[in-house]
Length: 79
Image (cartoon, rainbow, N blue to C red):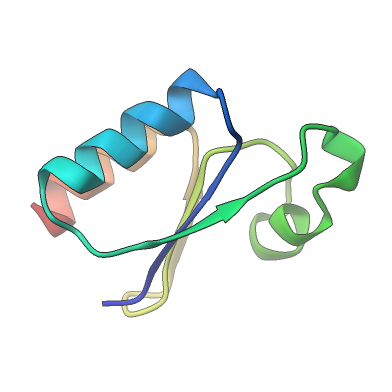
């Protein structure tokens, strides 16, 4: 499975997503982003925006943001 989670250290929304992925034993790669929105070029490149968290599921061709949406996707698809 090829899951990537773009996250920011200390971001509670990112932590919720990472915690749920860990609880479900979903393997994923963390990409730690810069605290400055203007420096989050990789996040913008993959998602079209600079906010985090962003989850990329390469196997299913899915890229999404907003922790609530990501958690719903994780429960529906990866659990």
